Length: 301
Image (cartoon, rainbow, N blue to C red):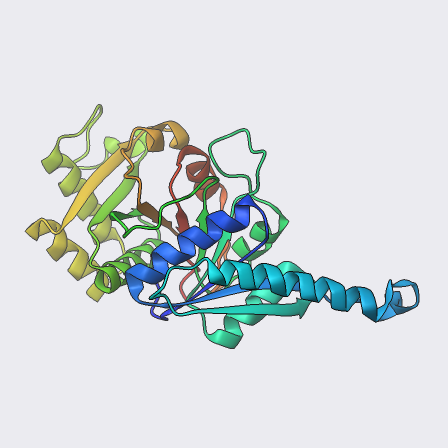
């Protein structure tokens, strides 16, 4: 997982979406030799509702049921993975998951997509929306039907020339270091940009043209150790490069090839508060075009 912490929190629900998130959490935990924390959230009664609530007995029954579901999820995790189960109380699922992530010092929160989506394999529910617009740690989205429990096959960084692009590259390189996984660096070139670049051109660029354009994009970002390392990896062949050109992001992304156990890393919107995730319209359009897990990293601090 492209985060320094070796603890991964799965926001679990006893549905297919919860199983998708758990499967992805297992994949990431195995790859990073990380602790896996599986959490469900019990609704915390509002004080004013005490008089009309179904009573403490109902709350105990509910919490016991949630604990049983968590225990079943924990029991399904393969041997060799250090796994812990939690039932936490909070006013909302997102609040509970964020609090538990702080409690265990998790480096990422993994959640599944809701069923019923008509576009791609993602439908973002209210919990995901809240996390994607507030989390201080990367949020990892599991597509519907995700089953992969094997090692990651590739990590793709999707970045542009805005300041947050270097954060995406930094997180991707951290993941590559932790998992010994191949890296692909993909940048976007709008039709209006291709004429300005000395490397990019209309049509499908060849390998050298793509490499040159990605290097140009890196030059536009902050010149720090991550950029230098990315350039060195490209030059040595340790990282592959691709350019997706066109005004329609979804069509451009669909032209990319995706491996079964690949993950894609994207940045937060320019509107994101420092150090917080905020999935913008660009990332949302990418999400509609892919069938692999997506990592949304917070904005730089």
